[in-house]
Every structure is written in structure tokens, then in C-alpha cells.
Image (tube, rainbow, N blue to C red):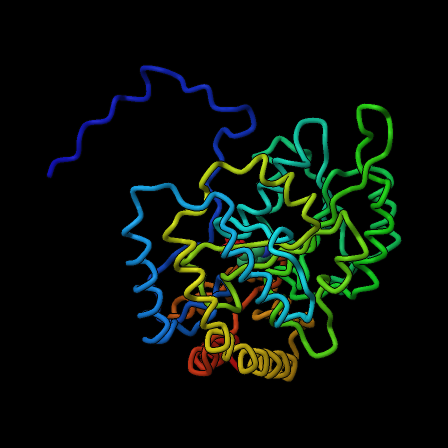
Amino acid sequence: MTTPAETPTAQVRLPLRPGLEGLEPYGAPQLDVPVLLNVNENPYPPSEAVVADIADAVARAAHGLNRYPDRDFHELRAELAEYLRVESGVSLAASQIWAANGSNEVMLHLLQAFGGPGRKVLSFAPTYSMYPEYARDTLTEWVAGRRAEDFTLDLNHAREQIAEHRPAVILLASPNNPTGTALPLEAVEAICEAAATAGPKADDGAPTAAVVVVDEAYGEFRREGVSSALTVLDRHPHLAVSRTMSKAFGMAGLRLGYLAATSTLVDHLRVVRLPYHLSAVTQAAALAALSHRDELMSQVASLRAERDELVEWLRGHGLRVADSDANFVLFGLFPDRHEVWNGLLERGVLIREVGPEGWLRVSVGTPQETAAFRAALEEVLGW
Ligand SMILES: *Cc1c(COP(=O)(O)O)cnc(C)c1O
């Protein structure tokens, strides 16, 4: 097959939105390397039994693909609520759950509903590098406060930023990416209190609440004694807690993220979503995967233990390592982190060059993959 000739772009000038000129699409390098520890995936593929069930469910759904799917995916929302009940001990109605193609799309829905021109979204850096992109794509102004030296949230600074900017949305990743830092419940509640009348002024001049989003993409990896923000959801009607099947659940390829909030907040998100955004295939596969939750989640405990060992090992070699409640570890400090990253890559281990200058992030893999990372790092650093 020959490639059709494209119309030369020089003939016209496309009306690209101001601010988008010269930008590259976001994404970590997808390289073909033996040991992939760069995007915090669960290293364990689904078992044959899970694969067979997903395939069956998709085949059943395929018979109805001439029809549009359930726009409101009731069954999936009910099953996600049931999953959260078992995982966090919090009972929620299906109407309090929202889902989309990855929590990235859930976040976009949040900013489409609550952000927009003349409005601000506030977060605290260093944090997830996609957040400014949601802001840009919804024409919402991005405001980044800062985290403390140890990557925790400085509550006084946070309160000041909220009062000064009157954001429509506050994004808090917990555990935070790329640092691994979880937010204590008291901090979540303090932010919710500060946000309760600190949103943009409504048309009639009355204060609104800023929507507080706690992004718990890595929530299942939290250490003993760290609580999910789901447990205070019933106290704060402007709180939303987002989760994903991409990380602990081991289903990054499925593209299914979700959130829990009041059904009123969820109803606002329903207004901005594209109709039928969750395909029948996605819904069927997600339901099948959820029915195997025990098996899919069975690796979480060993990944956590592996993470704690990795933290100790890195510290034992004199490196600085951020406390982690996630399935990755931020470590440093290197005068030339790119050289270290590249040395690992040359030895077949791909990690992520992300976070404040001098730090690197490595995902927790299988014991074999982690061993390969350690061996490569020993060589690179000449230990
Ligand atoms: C990985 C990640 C997500 C999940 O994204 P999906 O779109 O659900 O795959 C969300 N938030 C943070 C902070 C992440 O690191």
C-alpha cells in the first residue's frame, strides 16, 4: 500500500488556538526496554481466568454493538460503589459514582463543569504534570502553590492561596505523584473547611465553594493507618475523591477512572460529558475485571512490601528518598539526574526523569524487575 500524499500544510495556516503553538503532546517515552518502571503500572498481567472472563463479556457485548451503550452505565457505577465499600468501608449510592476513560477524563469533566474562562484551578507543586494540561484545555487559569521541603502540604500556605485566588477547583493528589506523599485526613478536612465559601462569586454575588478534588489514583497502596478521603465524603458536599483502575487494579490498558462525590456534583458532570463516552466494550470489560477484584488486588500487599524494602535499600546507600504511600519511589539527589536515568536505560531499565531538579522516580515492579533496577543502579553509581 502506498501512503497517500498529504496536502502541503504550507498552502493554508491552521487557526491553532493561541498558546498551543509548538507544544508537544504529553506523555512519558514509550520505549521498548526489558524493565519498564516508568509509569507506575501494576507489573502483573491479568491471569488466564481473568482474560477469559473479559473476553467472554466483550463477546456478549459485541452482539449489541449496533446499539449505543447505557449512557449512564448504571451497573458499572453500582459495582464501583460496591468495590469502594469493600476497599474503604464507605457506603455510597451508584448515583454518587462517576466514571470515564481514565481518571484523566474524569478530571477533564470536573474542569469542564467547574472551571473555564475567568476561573482558576489551584494545586500544590511538585505534583502531577497532567494537571496544568487539564487547565489549559478548559481555558481555566492554572495556579500552583508550593509544597513544603519534605513534600507535605503547608496548611497555612494552602489557606492563604485559597483565600487569595478563590479557585473554582483545588486538585490534591494523595498519594501525590511524583513524590508519593499522602495527605492526612486532617489536612483534607482543613482544606475543605477553607474552601467552603472560597470559590468564585456566583452571578448574584454569593460565595460558592471551591470543589476539592482528592486524586487517589494510588489510594490502594497507602500504608497502614493512612485513611482514604472517602471516609469524610459525607461531611463535605464540595469534596470529590477520584480513583482509577489503572494502577493497583492492574488495568491501565482498559482506561477506566472514576470518582465519588455527592449525586448533585455528579449530576453536574453528566451535563458536560460527551454522550456514550464509555463504550459498551469498556463497560463490559470493566465489570468483568471488577468481578475478579480479589485476584487482581492480591498483588497490592506484596507491592507495598516491595516498596518499603526499596525505600530502605536506597536510604541505606545514603540517598534521599521521599516517604511513599504509592507504588513508586522518588529518590535523589543527583547533580546530573539525566546521566543516571540514561545509565539505567543503557542497562535495560526505564525509569522516569520527573519531579524537582535532581530527583528520579522509579515504579515498584516484580521482585525480578526491582532486582534488575538495583543491579543497574549499583553499576551506574559505582557502588
Ligand atoms: C496515573 C495517575 C492517574 C490515573 O490516570 P488514568 O487516566 O486513570 O490512567 C491519575 N492521577 C495521578 C496523580 C496519576 O499518577
